[in-house]
Amino acid sequence: MYNFKISEIIQHPNHNISIRFQDLSNSFPAYKAGQFLTLSFTFGEREVRRSYSFSSSPDVKEPYEITVKRVDNGEISRLLHHQTRVGDVIQVMDPQGLFVYEPDVDHKQTIFLFGAGVGITPLFSILKTALVREEHTKIVLVYSNSSKEQTVFYDELLKWQEAYPDRLHIEWIWSNTKN
Image (spheres, rainbow, N blue to C red):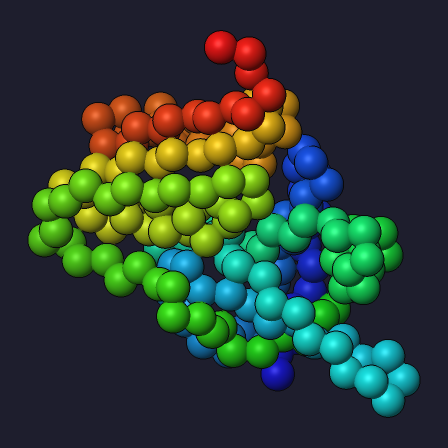
């Protein structure tokens, strides 16, 4: 187990937050784009673990970050949304997950990513990794939400699209739009 200190909590639309962490041990193993982080909580004698995908990329100089949707009956998601604060320390386990993207600097390909709502989280990590590490890779992201206002990472994705206009194309799908 590793101790991560919450360095920032970012509010997103549609009951989502991103939590940024600092590794207090400076020994957390490298993770891959698309993997998840398991948080561990102890309540008396009971340990509860929950896993959340990294929204940060291991290839971008940024803090470790997960994104969490509040679930009405979700014990840990409600705790993270309503009780955790900047400065709190949370125990975490090694990064895990097989849904990973391993960049290859020689790749010349087009990657299609399909996501909806908070399901964008591992895709955002993958998107950043591919853009930063593979200069010839193009990405098409098809991202569905109820509306622009309810879209997680909307502004951040626009900034990535501005930074990589010839390599990143986003197809926004709004289910509440009348067209």
